[in-house]
Length: 398
Image (tube, rainbow, N blue to C red; front, side):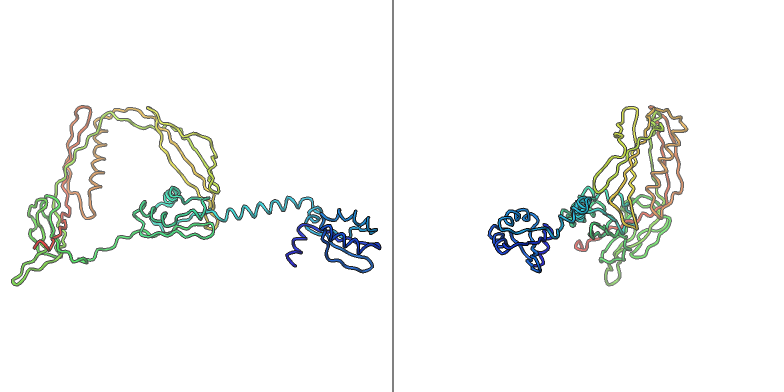
């Protein structure tokens, strides 16, 4: 009954009065012709309710029966809307708002990253976007497990990763790998220590195994330095040899620097492009086209991403800025001194890349010559480096 009352209110109805001697006949004709009436009450006169769309059909029946009908009260939503001219727009706006809210609630609008220490958040977000996780995507279409696996493949530094959805937000939680200290002989290996390079031993730190060389000895690459097999009177003892064997080693370099080079000179011209990504839609803010390089002009691109945040929550509004710096390519001729300085810098860079934590460079001798438009630098460095290299002994060979 309550539901029927709600439906009648939504469609609208009128309460009218009926006076005259043919009231009973009038009510019977209403039922016969399919004009349902309800809530019939009698005081001095009859009060009757009927649908607003049926009331106009009752006038002819009332006239035939000698009954006078008159509207007493108008009820329902259609009459309320007529009383307030702007209410239609309000209802239309409310309807659109509800539909839009229901639609937006099925989408992803905020993506956050937690737990990364060295990995760049913007790079992870760009990779996730390529994998299908982006603003505006339907939550039902997300293949969470596949995205997790692909992100771990793309970034080997990730130890674990989890994608958690909360409403319209996705939180990417991760942990980065931490190098674990090696536990000595945790896997019961039997190993020797051999020389990784030719050199002359200057100091030794043997912790396990039997030393086969002494300080001052010259050794060749691959020579046994510390044995993992210790012979005793009764049996042989097998162990994992560990040691640090420092030796003076020689490193040679040959670096070529052309005397005529292409040099990039900034022209001062910077082309900027900006775009706003709002609710998953890309909208250009500027209408500059991407510049094209030519024979004498080149460009370097710099991408900046600005996220909108409120109270730590990332909103679905991101600004992308691309800056293209223009350079003019000119051929310049280096002097012998400039080419030599450039070669020395390249030599220092190569030496730094090759150095391990405990190694050090004792001396470096250089010489150079100029031929065929190139400066060729020859470098010879003496290092003090740890040449110990572990070599496993497979027990099934004995």
